[in-house]
Length: 541
Ligand code: ADP
Image (cartoon, rainbow, N blue to C red; front, side):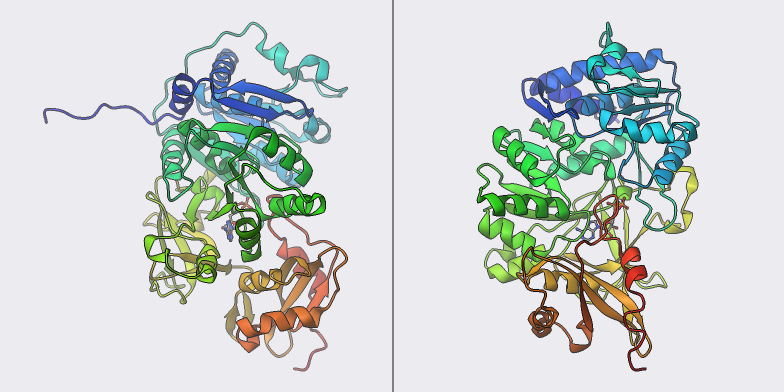
């Protein structure tokens, strides 16, 4: 053939090259772990990342070796991420909210050689140090003067980088691994997911298009979702790819701190799990404050309750993008963006579409099957196992853990149960292990939770299946009431009754002061099931 495009490998550090060269002055503002605000730019982040690459190359690590990071979202963590990838190494973001045994398990399983950490996590590392058998050095993302007393042998950031010069990126193929993140392990041990340069670049491009996140150089993006959760929802890649300004909130994720930084920095776009937004609402409701710059939020990690979408859109004028994804998908799978045929539908019907997890972007293939792997119709009601594949979907876990989740045609079984509408909107009805089976029929716990959340006295709701002598399992509604609200279970059930089949209605309502969450903000249903397993024991058989 006479002519062909250039062989230009999809390397993730080319994203930062682009941002530094063409959006070099764009701000990257961070609240560092010590609470101070750092004001930098993409040009600064690029320079620092290449100094880090230089130091790592000099440290003698072999290409593909892992470097751990127990770090908040800050400018330094962003530079570190690129510096590690640019050195041909693998940046392993460690979730500090996991149980301590899980943290030592994943650091050892990944065989992290160096551990980077914020000062916040030094006490945790002091406890775990003896168990971390592969870590040779600990580097703290703080200046020497700010490193607190510690029994650990550590190097301060400024000392480590003192005298370092920017070093060119190390040449690797686009299929080389560059990132790693463990699933939170709600079932069994956490499993390692590995990202390549190519998967991260393709995923960041896929995230950027208008019907997905629609990022632009006009946006000021605040990723509240920590970089250690599910590849940081790819914002460390998609934001610089689009030259958007970045505002990184560090350790202060409470409503008041998030609000203050958002307003001070003119944030237009943000991303977080539902519980974070509950904190922001609570803050704004108690102070009467409004959002002056925020225009869009992406909400995912667990189902976004319609009451949350309604409040954001109708009270605060902020558009909600409800997204579904998984660590295994880099992480984006679907977004509930409406189509032209929905322009004329009622506000209520639009809200119902945004209650679904949405449609796939290019690069994600998706299907729903029965237990025999037969594909189910897109009729908006027949639910089954949700399966996906694509260039940014894991093809295997690290060290081949959990091989049963992948079939010979490359489909990954997500463990979610869902249906797909004729318009292509996917709706998760449950995790396969959380489905409630009552008298042989499935009940969706998520639908019930969303309905309960619509009641004004409800701050948070969880529905679990509890053993029942007659029906096998029956739903139990667990509620955290709004502060000062009446605890009237019958009234809440009455408000749900008109919207569901009679036999879906929970038999009981229990009020609690707190619902347990996993390290990534999901309701810990196993704990609730343990706590309430005897509730229906005395019911008539
Ligand atoms: P982890 O496994 O570490 O908790 P993940 O983010 O990888 O974190 O979890 C992925 C799972 O989270 C999905 O399989 C799904 O069950 C749930 N999830 C994510 N987003 C949504 C959403 N928008 N609606 C319902 N469930 C969601």
